[in-house]
Image 1 (cartoon, rainbow, N blue to C red):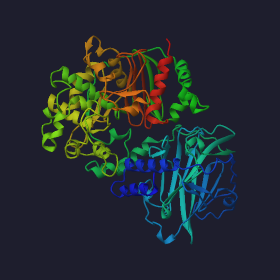
Image 2 (cartoon, rainbow, N blue to C red):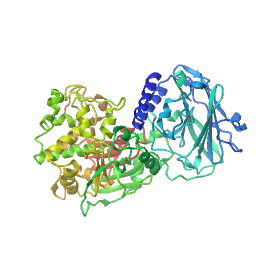
Image 3 (spheres, rainbow, N blue to C red):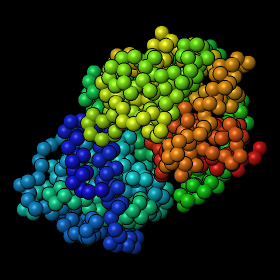
Image 4 (cartoon, rainbow, N blue to C red):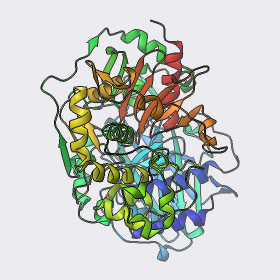
Length: 636
């Protein structure tokens, strides 16, 4: 990744102050940093000098402790090391302190525009970041950034590409001062705000420093580490023992207030200002109610928490974490909100984290796509849609006027994410922006959907597919998608009250927007375990279940990258192969931020993990890999 390419991406911020855009920038930033050659090995653990005097956070670094607290003057990029940045770190019983001297070519050319805290536009500037893994386990770290203008930003730094997300936010202070050749930064980070329980005499954390040297087009780091586990270790002693609200470091109420203060629902740009996709978005967007039944489907309980925890702790993924924490600590630490394991309709394990309970509403993200797939199967059974081989222009004829090639696309192609429809996450507005936050998704789809290849030849995951399927459902049934689901699926499976998020024009967010309790995800999964039946009623057509969830013959090269991880994709369901299994492979619904409804038919197991970030690396595959291994080893 070239530096100038990252800088070009930064310019997108002038068009949309969006966390989606920022995530792309930070991904580019850290991929670049990770791709550098190794110029230095990690230094030995540093036992920091403990500060005993008051430090005034003014950016001047004139207290005596700073001169005793030098950590490094050497930062690296792909060309070598540079001595244009000095890093100082100290602490006291209540705070971490970081100081930086950042030399520049010209003080006069520094951007001096002041921004409110957490405005990602500061990433255009020259900035310095203090990144700390408070648990020293490589799962994630927390980044505190200050630029040459005194603007501040913080976030959660998540593997594997170490992209910066903004669910984490902390109360901390920083200040910047200028001299003739450098800008200097002081940071004060309260230990009580960091997500770790300080219940030991000493605590080992790891850290990394990142600097965007804008005037020289460089991204510098120390240490020159490839992943969070290779950050530089530091030891703190004699600190006050504090117990934060949760171990993830995330205050969702604070983040909701922030999003509400930024968002304007009526325009694409205004909706982008609300930030990256969030588990709180159902509280920001319009929604259509999905009524439940008076007596929702019940579950039986035969809880075996110790067995379940031990089995997860014995999975190879968990063992590779090399953590001393138990499984439940890791669940909370990895930004999980709900975690349930069932066999048939019996709950073996159930727990909630980070302020969530069994009564909380959990948004689906792309788990909604698997519901959309199911609704298509039901609409075919109900006679509203002919079959999956119908062309989409039979239901959306105006697409022919846009491009005659749309008439070659079938409903099956949409369900398989193989319609040959173009999709890009680059620029603004990207297709990600358009399909997630457009205030009129119908119009946005018609305006932006375009052909790039023949249908049925290659898998290309993108959100135009479910939006087009939503248009087909709406037109074929003559009712809203949520109303159809309430009548034909939700009530018949014994669901509770729920909702489906909408755009401003009243169209369901087909790609992401179902909002319900964790039990309704479990009820949905149980239908698929039971061949589509609930209390003797054939809710989902029995033949649809293997058609939607099990692998079929695909053209060579259709989804080779998925096959490398024992994964396939069919009708808006993901799957994992099991040897010798016919129509009995594992399959799962998966959503952004790590939402999973995972089903193992062979062992009749259901796993549900919900969260506000993936929490593990690599995010999208780590949880299914653990579920798969757990199910493989499971014995009653």
